[in-house]
Image 1 (cartoon, rainbow, N blue to C red):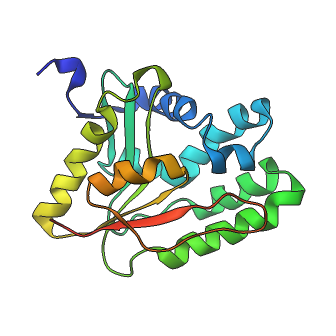
Image 2 (image 1 turned 90 degrees about the vertical axis):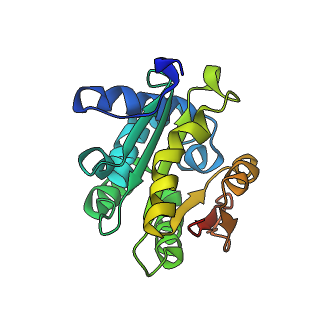
Image 3 (image 1 turned 180 degrees about the vertical axis):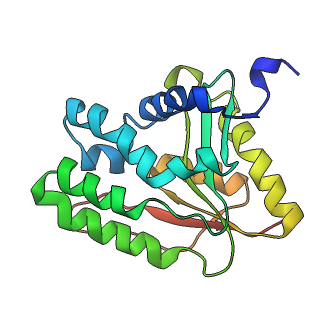
Length: 195
């Protein structure tokens, strides 16, 4: 296999590159752009959002890249949660006041769908737009999906883009509800039982 297409843990010195990849990947994401519709606001706020929601993946063996960083997945292992204080601060500082209550409602609903048993949570997976549709998204997810299978643990995510639901279904995830508040787009929580 070409080493540029093998999946590897993200070393600390490549954290900024991984966040940049995710920022590019989410530039047209319905929920992200509803939260930050102005391009400048999105570009300044989204990297902090990645750190708040998924940044603990870098220190807990849950950050993976493929294709020299063209694809990135941030997984939070059982017992590791997003940085709630950073998330609240980011929403208060970076989301327009007219949408803040809806964003907090979305976050609350997201918490209600998380499995109550130990599980791996996928806050982010993304592939740079110029490298999409080449299988990198599935490739970067497999190390933890295989671990979930071995350790008999579920995996959980929220799909913020309806176009991605068939992709997740092919990997064994199934929709378990709908998350929506105010004028927000729908977000679909999805669960994968070990296979």
